Length: 137
Image (tube, rainbow, N blue to C red):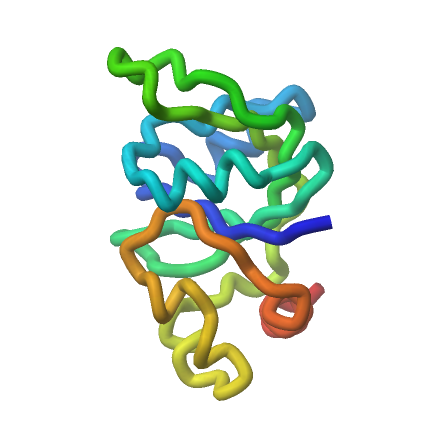
């Protein structure tokens, strides 16, 4: 299993909206960055992803599961980009803020810090465990 982090502005698509979609999930559309696209192409059904509220909140709020592997993004008229379907799994008991991630020395190399603008990013197994513990899981 691989681990990921996906970002969304809560005013555009929030954790609560993701939860409301149920087990069938929701297409993760609108990604227009080639590095993020490659990350989505590497996602496999069953992989897990942190759900991060960007710009507003700046915190990891939940865990989602990849329920459908990449396919052409129906919102992309150029045909260059892909999407995956993700379903909410569970919320973190305590959201993990960007500030808390930055203060944790063991997360100094995390993509959330190093590649802060990347909307779909990999998370190592060690980082996953640390953030889950920080979030009360």
